[in-house]
Structure formats: C-alpha cells, structure tokens
Image 1: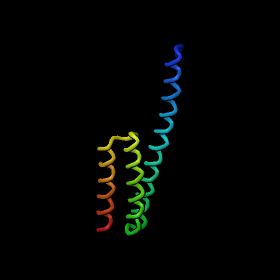
Image 2: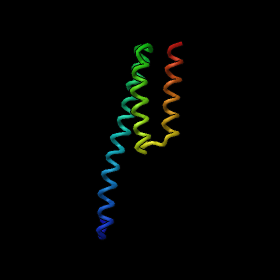
Image 3: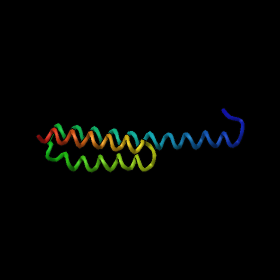
Length: 87
C-alpha cells in the first residue's frame, strides 16, 4: 500500500477505471456472443443484432477501452461472418 497521498489517490482512480473498463469489455463480449447465437439461429435477423454489436464496439473504442483498429477488425470479422452465413 502506498504511503504518499497522491499515490493512494492513483490507486483508487486506477481501480475505478479498471472496473469501468472491465464492465465495458464484458458488454462487448456479451453482445458478440448474442450476435453469434443470432447468426446460428436465423441469419436474416442477425443484421439487427450486428448493428447493436457494432455500436457497443464503437462505444468501447471511443472510450479508449479497446483500440480503434481492434474495434474495426472485430466489426469486419462479424460482418464477414454474417455475409458468409447468408450465402
């Protein structure tokens, strides 16, 4: 445990940020799983779920939780998965 007041504050702040980031990442993973299930169930309805998933990924990238290139890569892979399932 730190002794200096500013170091104590940094520990508190980093814990709060870590919790926030974990919640956002977990939400992204959950929405990706929902999309995967939607593709398996009915590819025609999966387009609406893809929009929600893309929004969740974009929000995570905007907040700096994931890198913007990683977000774009994830979205591209999901769109490709949907296109292949529709064929």
